[in-house]
Image 1 (cartoon, rainbow, N blue to C red):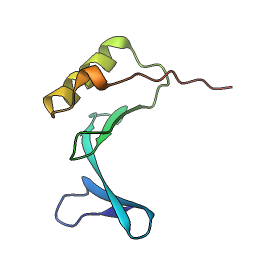
Image 2 (tube, rainbow, N blue to C red; image 1 turned 90 degrees about the horizontal axis):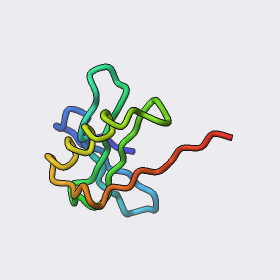
Image 3 (spheres, rainbow, N blue to C red; image 1 turned 180 degrees about the horizontal axis):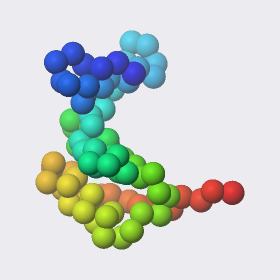
Image 4 (cartoon, one colour; image 1 turned 90 degrees about the vertical axis):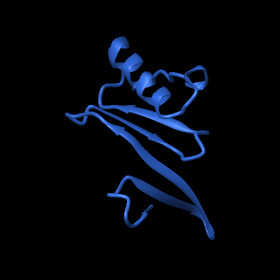
Length: 85
C-alpha cells in the first residue's frame, strides 16, 4: 500500500498487479479504535471492520449510517458473519 501525500494518511493506493493501483480511503475511525470503515472514492466497495467479531447491532447500525452519510448505499452493505474455528 501507498499513502497519498497531502491526505493526512487517510487515502491509500493499493497495488496488487503492476502497474495498476486501487484507491482505498479511511472513511471513519472510532474514537477508541474499536471500529473503522474503509471505502473507495467510487463508492463501489466498503469494509466495516471491528475488533469484536460480533459487534452489538446498534453499533453496526450506527456504522452503516456513517457510511450512508458518506454516499454509500446502505441497501448494498452486507454483513458477513465471522466464524473462528
